[in-house]
Length: 259
Ligand code: PGA
Image (cartoon, rainbow, N blue to C red; front, side, top):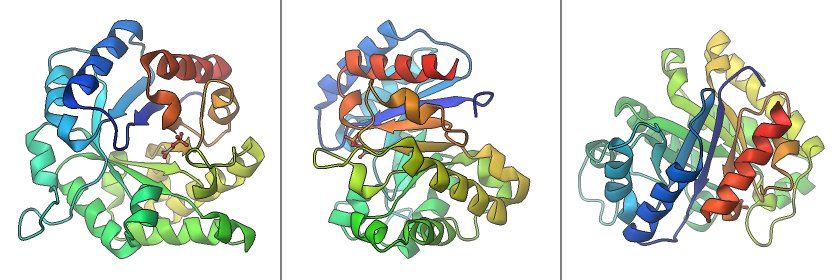
């Protein structure tokens, strides 16, 4: 919706050292004008979070720094995992929950994702919940059912009063990454509307507080076409956000299309 805040950022996945992430962050802040109505975010790997969050705390740009994943427990015998409390201590603003690579490669299930959502809300973070159907689910004609089911389980028993902490990214799995098939706005618009209506059944009018983002092979050439879909309030960019030049170009393309 053109009159709501536009949320834009990138997930670096398993790329960058802490030095590279901070360098990216500094160059981004130096080259992107801070404007009202735009919420930027970056999601570096966990090893970069402390350094980037410290850099972000020291400047007024209010770029959200996000984690790519977390565990639902506050602490305990979970070797290799990171808790919301640990992220909170680093002043991390946001956490991705249920990214397609977590679901597909690491077998994350909706019931566990629901626990993560509650833990992140409790810790005061923004939750960027990723949903989306696989190519197979799409071929069977159950895209809408898949996305509605993910939302209903992942956000189960989230209080509508916490809606302002939730963002939903629609990322059809078939459109993500180097093998991804670029989606068209006609593919995305009906699911974006379905997401809004599903959120309405869960949160009532507070569903309007939840930005819906699109992600999957977004770049400077197609960003405008996704950014102007009526229910789309932002973008979750992968590869095209990994250089400052391309991040900025993609952002500018989205913003100028929404003017
Ligand atoms: P991509 O990644 O833009 O490189 O397709 C998107 C994502 O995984 O969120």
